[in-house]
Length: 63
Image (cartoon, rainbow, N blue to C red; front, side, top):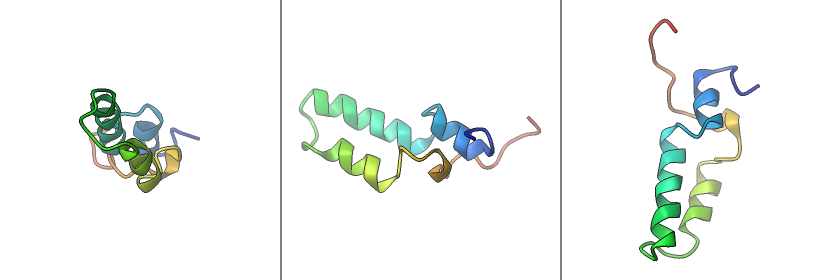
């Protein structure tokens, strides 16, 4: 499931680096400040629809 790893949980809740970049691209696209399709490219490149593809959040405390 999404909580098997910290990386997967961060991806699931869209709180990982790549998800934040994708949201920023979405907002910039709405303002016309990035090229059309930039968001779709990021979603595909970083496999944002796959929670197990998350790579950030591996290190941490004793949570």
